[in-house]
Length: 146
Image (cartoon, rainbow, N blue to C red; front, side, top):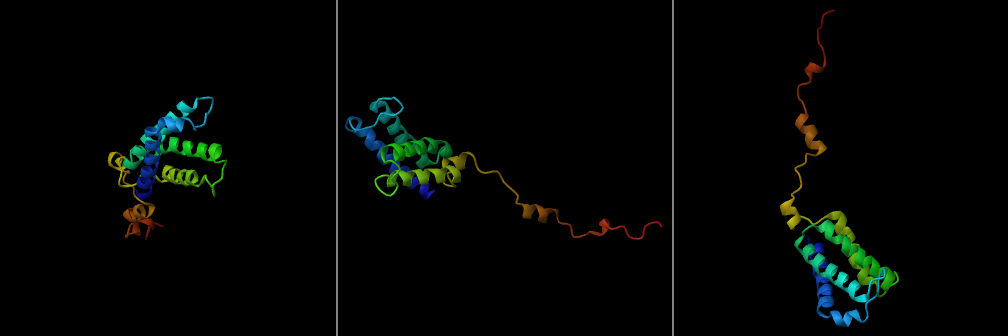
């Protein structure tokens, strides 16, 4: 839960900055897949702000990290040219954290956990213990007809 909340707050701050200073960011933002910098910035700001807000709450965590992963991957490759030890370090950190959250899920302290608690499971050991029989005499036929 700590990773999810901290990364969500940090990303929410980045998204809020893009929304609050949209005009200033638009002048320096990239054009991606033929879309104008304004459209690209709008999509990125939406993803960084809205998906981060849902991430903080732990709502649909595995779904909301997908756009965040894609955004950070594009930023790392297109803006920072894959330089994970230089100026692309924060994009790489976010990409790694969001990828981990995709595989780990939201954890116990989340809306996901409240709405969809994990099904009760019985481990193999517990199943064996439940079916363990102490009396095995019926497995062997003793004194049968000759």
